Image (cartoon, rainbow, N blue to C red; front, side, top):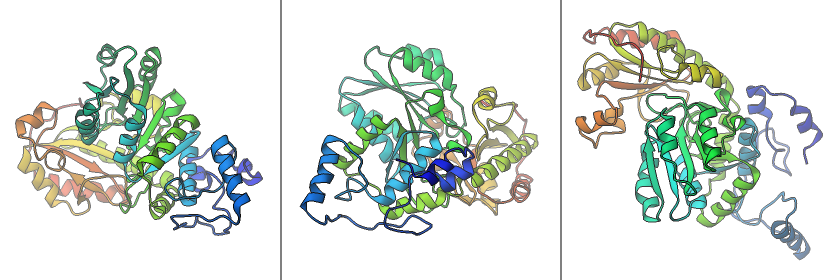
Length: 416
């Protein structure tokens, strides 16, 4: 039951207020402003009666405010899970040591042999790899459909076998945005659960459960952590579905360390402030790039040229902190452009305080030939810029000085 202070906070809906104050009461037995790191693998009982009362509540149902062993729960972990659930407008959340751990745990827990998944072609490469290798060995089949092609998605449904429709929004690297009304309608029509990875959006920009999505996935490493210093992943959804995931987590053993949980909760307190700044910087940067003569194409849902701009305007309160674009020239020209920049670091990932930049041809697809990369839509001159919290004018000035040394080329309007 919520305390009176929690109930009084429940009426405040602002993302920053929820980020700072949302979630369950602080860890009991302490009066610290920040949630303590409960660094314990096991928990003691004062006597046998207390143990029996705990076991009765756990086995037969009842209010649990403690745990007996760290693999099944931890107060610091509970605190960050409750805070994330409130931010998403969800009943519950389950946190894991990484985003990949979160999605693989969900699939391993829910799927059975001879079932089927549909995912869009912009989904994270390692998730597709898990489906094509590990899940395939267990008799689970996967169909990949083009992002935004809802006719192909519906045609790929295998009645009574398709368990998940899985996509990201915005996607990586082209920042495509799923039409959630259409996606959810197809899922409900065929009794397939919808799973949406909204790492790039965050609950500040989009809350998919309000559209009827069944599960939301985040790589909490990114915007939730916000400082490039922690790995984590999270799944949010209904109380019953998340309970099943937590029960399986106790068996699979993929539990997050309490210090990781503490760092994620610390990051969440500034989530809305950071994301809103990154939204503004990214939009200003995308507009600058689209006007630049040495940029061939810009991919950002906040631009009218983006194929999903109208969907993004309807669904999102902000367009995110990642901008992808193609510069004039080829692989070496893109590399030279990146090497001349002074502010962004060359690195994978996104969502932190520092701006990061990468060439997908190298960072994600180095093992493929240029022909193989082009076949899946990854051009040699493609660049992905993940904005941090630096000032927009400084980012733009840095981009401009490097672009001035790129050979001019014909510009192409819009994205695809």
